[in-house]
Length: 584
Image (cartoon, rainbow, N blue to C red; front, side, top):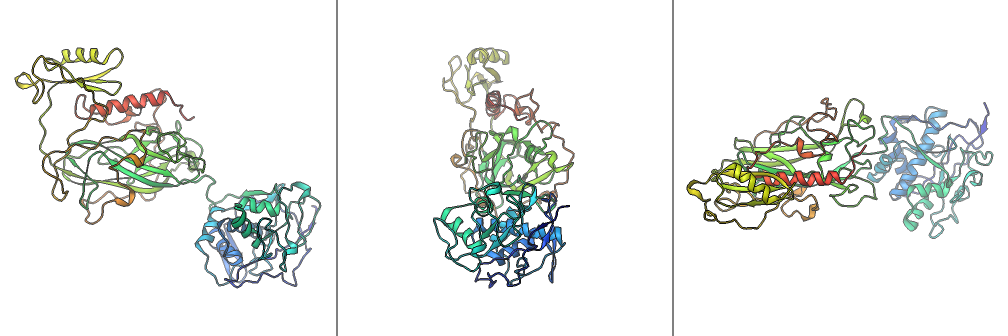
């Protein structure tokens, strides 16, 4: 095997007066030792023995300490670049010696400084990343450089170690300059691709707005590769993270401490949760189980059991106004179109029914990915969210009588009071809606021949039409709500096109209830043990041929309160599904 002469160590450069680590090159720097060119590793080193310090966790202990000691006063992008360079040095030491020294001869771990939160973040967000070129592990030399480095060039003009620094911005292949700090191999030698200035890295970030990738290319060449090893200590490239942005119900707001909303026992209503994708993986729900991270995202109950209010364990992302939720910087900060950063579970609201027994009920949920990336298991992510409803006993409202038509364009209409049978009601409703637009009708005979407060027999009802969000009666104010007596109208269900900011009666995450607790909640399934769901059973992935999310929703009584809203959600989703493509 060809043996190449390359420095076995890097100068551990530091520019930190705050941590009192020297930035000078050791006078006994062992340059030019014979070493073997190393292949870029695929497996991450999750621990590293540090001489005199013992074994340390690479990503959560060693790298945060090193970058704090070496360049801890830098901002985030320079620290990310420092973390990748430090990890490259550490990987080289592990492959050649199985351990690393704690000194400027290698790089400094123990300088007496506690890792900063910024250093921890830089280590975490670059976990497993190191430099390579042509399949060879690059030894990422770095020195303190010149504290006077300034824009626009950000090049060193003084400093005891500046003569080791290389400037390889725009250079590739054999054009890349190697540093005299290590063995200078043939042109294009992958192990020596130059040397970074730590003061210069700060200047590039602060004065020229360089990110860590451009900082590294500035010193190590335009074609330097930022490779990533895999292992249990390295988070996947695509991350699943979420933030709750809104929780909402069309039930009446509760102003007391123990609940968010109040509903009559047995009353149907809707509730929703809106989330923002703060990770890098796109959320979607493909047919069966997808292979990639985020390809089978559902909203599931935090306990793993059916929810007391919705009766469901999970809701597919396909039920939402947007079925693809991006988390990268190119995503728009919207909620109703594919590619938005936010999504609402679900479009129009999750159908719920207040239990018959009065009390406080908590509806608790969390996002979960069932993709094959997690093997036979699945992965819960994001916050556990909760909406609490106070269920109270209410006086039943008098049943409405007469004939009403429901059309596919979302309109509903009270028809002539003279209609005396369900068959006659259906025939008139079909005529009213027009060909192909009839969805349903509701008929109840009126005692005495006329509806209470309605028109006299033989007269036509008002030609005004009502949309999908007809108002229904809310429960009377319960003690402590601060409302008046009698019934009050509910808020209408949120349109699929409305952004969160336009929903004026929603609860933001920090407006949740506090104080007294109601009935004991279900214990959360903290570990999200796989429940065997394969993405195919009812309530999971919606089959292509069905094409309508309402098919998996709890049934509503035809003609009962809220049927217009349900039918309009059906019509809206059919139109939306027909105009959009399914993810394959």
